[in-house]
Length: 448
Image (cartoon, rainbow, N blue to C red; front, side):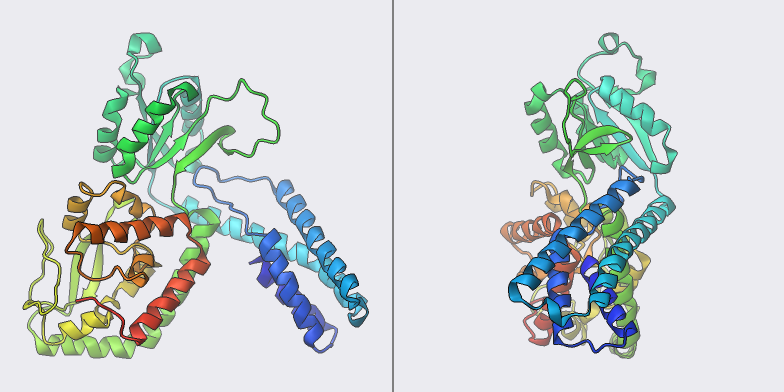
């Protein structure tokens, strides 16, 4: 975004002054865009735990970084003795207008992300590991911040009610070993660990127990006794926290990903509608049964969703046991093998993307039966559900596509999914989409 704003503002000012956008301005635009990418990365507004931000800090930070960009550009200009080639009026106007546009774009994106988050109908359930002053203080603040839509279920602690000076009705749900089971059964979305720093091994053990859930995990350090200087830890309602496990797609980042999905998916549906109509007719005429196949899968945070595909088999499996497709599978229809080889059966999932159930890029959603099977066999398997499932993903363009007959193949696919979560960006999504397109055009697809 900063690079685009910098380029467009320079182009507009040159056009307003009725100058030609010659090679010298192209060079300036390219160099300034590169510098803004390095020094003016988009702000990560819209943290799931914080809807407010300091506008003064944003403005001052943007101005300071923009001044750094200008200083570097001046140094390059003087060093190359090229400053005389530019219009002083154009450069001055560009230097003054661009930071205003940068701040405006950041504010607009943050406002959009905030409205999206506030419009989310679902409330998030939270529990605390450790019942102490820190956790009780945050729980009280969350209770008085309904805009965050976080509902505190209660606390887990190895100490009894007598030592904690509270009764069970006040929110003590059980001992720490009971928490993982409660999280799985109760659909808990957020976990705040408020154990003392000296209990770090217990924190590690808890994380190990929670790896089979999709809950976001935050650590609340008891650091109020320290005089923090220039602390940069995250905070929720004035209380510091450390994120241990969280989705990389939130706030402004999530809004940008969603807008990208909607734009590309809607355009693809319009362009591919004749192809999809032809496929629907072929499916209907070559075998009895419905055109579309609906199957239950796990979506974001492990919530069950229904995805759409063109039917490629004579059977409609969606039970506790589902056999994966294989080469020469007798269940395939006359056109089913062709559709699966070229991934054309996945096209109806563009509708799932517009519904918000899926994304264009993300971990491929597995059937519910397969999820329940592999979550018991692969440690950390459910972490892949911290982002919306995708039509394509890093695993698919890395060669892990089609049947996973061996556990090692599924482990490799899950490892790619986790790698995607660690390094997610819009640029990575676009790169994966491009490689997916090349893979399909070169017929490197190995799906059955």
